[in-house]
Length: 347
Image (cartoon, rainbow, N blue to C red; front, top):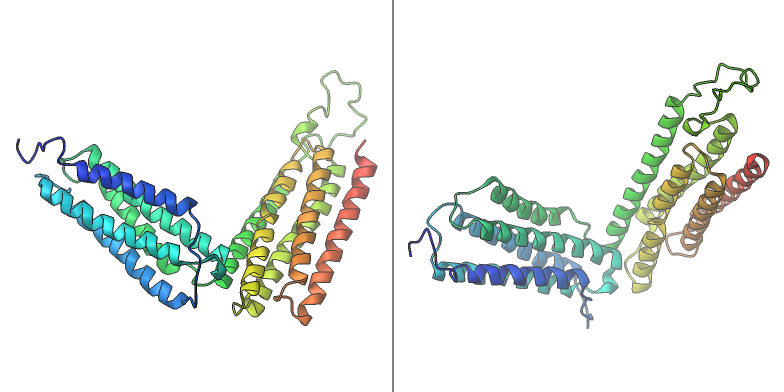
């Protein structure tokens, strides 16, 4: 057979490699960290990890170039490149598993996700090559190669310790809550009662229903309820911003207990944004007050939990106690106001 039409088993090393990369990806995604015995150096870890990632990127480039134009590599060439890529994958996964949970679960998740993304990109590149061997470089192969590069490049931007990783989570949460508030404010500004200029009793007997389409707009009582709910949502954003500042200024990595407390704060804070979203969605017309009450109570509970964890953690310095107590009171105040409104206009 010609080089343009290789024997069926010529690409077997690449098929085996593709399966191996997928297995490595799944093992990283689902596996546990190795127990750390003795001292662990984060700076050394990152130095070695960056070299491992660089190697994966370079091997992906070599692989793509080899299969960028006819003729195909020989069977021996396929074996050689497969072994070289496999070596870089093994190094990357081994280094990842060096990172112990004691350095922070949040940090480890960030590194895990980035590692999985790099391996997944490599597996996709292999699948593209195997799907059209012997053909000229395709747009799909170019995009897959670029995907591996991008996945590897992002390691330079990853947080390098657990405090930075937790801050990244909190920053994301702040942005999501801000977006939810802005969307609600925009909807309130744009929405108008289509019958707002008609007296309520003018069309009471109108067979057409008059204001019968209240499913599409907010009544005045709805708007009063929303305004109070916005207060609770704003307290959510304020809590996240103040917590971010406390972590940035007071977060410490000198003891495993402190690192674990940072993880607890991140886990609790991640519940805020979905709870804000659930509340916001229940406020759109037609407003179902039972759903609003449930989501208000859920958000208030989540916020109180975050503030309680913050208060008992090392990031809460003496100067921070006042804002924790203030926001806790603000949550309780908004909760009482909302419940009062729900009681008066719920029937």
